[in-house]
Image (cartoon, rainbow over all chains, first blue to last red; front, side, top):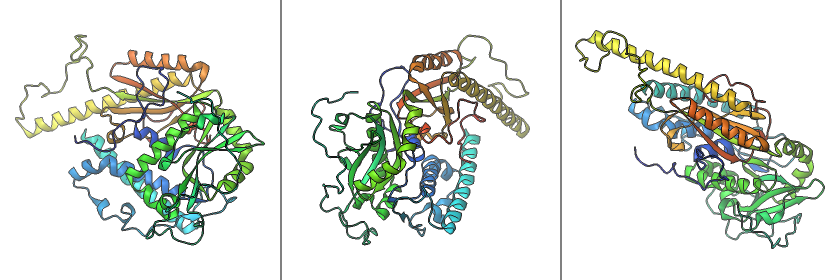
Amino acid sequence: MSETPWTGTSRSPARSVSADRQSANLADILERVLDKGIVIVGDIRVNLLDIELLTIKLRLLVASVDRAKEMGIDWWEHDPSLSSSARAAPKAKVRSGGSAAGEVGSGDDRARLEEENRLLRERLAALEAAQEEEK
Amino acid sequence: MTTPSGTPGTRTPGTATPGTATPGTVTPGTAAQRADDRETGTAVYLYGVARDLDESALDGVTGVADEPVRPLVHPDSGLTALISVVGLDQFGEQALRDNLEDLAWLEGTARAHHRVVTDIAGHAPTAPVRIATLYRDERRVLEVLEHDHRRLLELLDRITGRTEWGVKAYAVPEADGAGDGTGDGEPADGPASGASARPTSGTAYLQRRQAARQARRATQDRLAEHARAVHAELADHAVASRQHASQDARLSGRHETLILNMAYLVDDEQTEGFHEVARAVDRRLPGVKIEVTGPWPPYSFIDGDEATPTSVPEGAAEGTRP
């Protein structure tokens, strides 16, 4: 298996308590900083659905490209939802304070993103199931 | 963790405008060229909010885009926002959207964000904020603290004196029975199972395939059982738990099968017990390797909604998104 820029360790955030403990890997960090943590509304931000979409894309693209290609699945290369250039980028909302946290500006945006997320989840599930089966 | 103590530094929290407008932050050609928000070319990046932080803890700490991390104190509540002034060339609306799609940029930013929060969480109760939370200026951050300080204090109460620990359980590729000389390896039943069997017919081949599939399923059932057992024991020593998504080997650098990926919020007095249980389970369950990560800032427990007060998860290591 070839090296990817994705492996690699940060310095350990740890006091030494358990010998089994590893330094933080990127997957652990991304899981937390992208998807967990407190949500406070900012002035400039990409809406949360976009970030959720991003994490799904990360999992899809990083997790499954090789396997999927082996299996002859290459739909993402033509899928506008996975190619930022092919997609008409949804607008990030610049908001001033006091508005509700993490909301997409219009109902249309939200519905579209939710649908996009749903489709991606299904595809991800299918790919991961296929991967599992191949093991 | 080392704290460069002394030299508290003269910081002036609460000043309205960012004093350090970085020159040349506006890159021509990005879509982030609209008139609003461009006056200074900078924005304020928020990492998290700490309570009763000794500001010297921030000496020498750098964050995203290699910018120094500064404290911004809300005097009434004792809350300190951890901030950096960043350029809109990287963190403006459109630039941010593009950069978040750039995996290398995302990695660097995520690690920097995490490093800051981790550093500070070692000194004071700290609520990590989700990545890429940005404000126009420091005055806006103070407004947010003013507006949200009750909620923030409540959240911090919940995690004070507690620490997040990550626990992963991996299935170790079958060493069971075979090489250990323990003699309990069952003879694989089925017509054509022996290693000597040659693919004499299509039927035999299919039978072998089916037997293999069944064996795999049985293994998966056993692993799920193990995962539940591991969780049940650890949950006894934790205040809350939260399931994390399964991980890919490229991101984690691991190739074993992940059967459990959890975060636990543990009272600091319970830390030893918690780790002891993890080690004991690791020794006891054949074919399962337990790995504990942390201490983490309480990312997984700061927003409350999805954390479970230590109950059993329904699946092994599936994602929990609805």
